[in-house]
Length: 77
Image 1 (cartoon, helix red, strand yellow):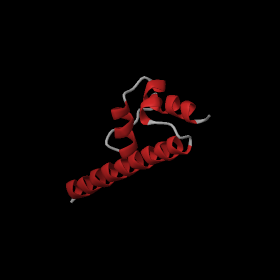
Image 2: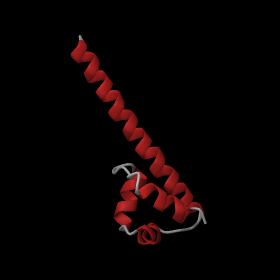
Image 3: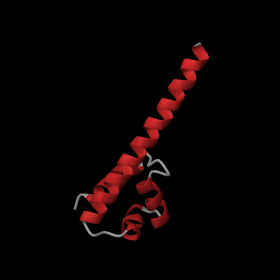
Image 4: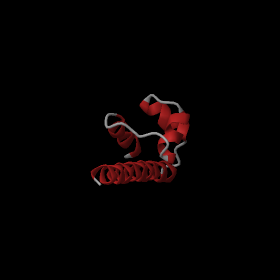
């Protein structure tokens, strides 16, 4: 019984983490598009490739806590 509950909790946590990653990535993409900024330009501004920005935006990779403020700063203006 306890192991079944633990497995369900792990699945819920993984699913919600993936949903949060997709949401954050989508917000980055929306702001970048609003500013008419390319993935390449944003990537160069934060020291990444456009492929990595693309992975963040699609939620395939989780953006780190250290990288999020860098992206946010570039997207403020």
